Image 1: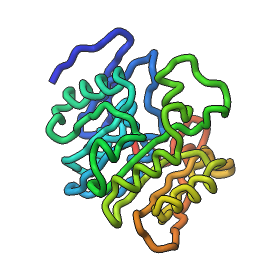
Image 2: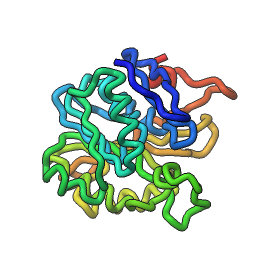
Image 3: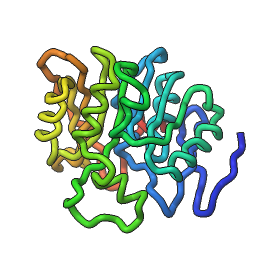
Length: 245
């Protein structure tokens, strides 16, 4: 289906199932972290999935492409972003499979109810309101800073939304790992699988990918790290596989 593009928008090829995505060069565009999260997720075609703070819609689109999930919801608080994602969904003829809801993460359980999802995903804002310079572009600021919600808000809502045994998948920064694990456990989400992400094999981690389970037993698997580059500007084979090249 063809759609109308607004000023500053472009269509990018996702290299998966022929899917395409609309992005605005003047707003927030998806990054590698969202793509890596989509590759870390474990989802079945029959699962009911929700992405909290879906932004450009990249995670719902890639989960649909990679796992064949037919019931995906994207929750987004910014009207312009939500409307753009709806057009991306229509562009890929996925309106029966992906629903975009305009709403606040802090009110997610009021919107959808309790215990109704098998999988929750989120690429939440990494920085606290006082952390670093806040981007003057509102869309970018909301995506990067905890302005509309804190991680505690995201984790708390994920826990309420999930069925017993349901999984929450997220990507975040290493400097907040201890805090995030404490927060997850405080709301009944047990960390179960961790993968650190490094730019190069000999560099410090820049991100981590984490799976937690609602009501899960203690015990976490730390997977081998994900290395992005094997040489300057040359991706590793694992990155090429995740991107689908």
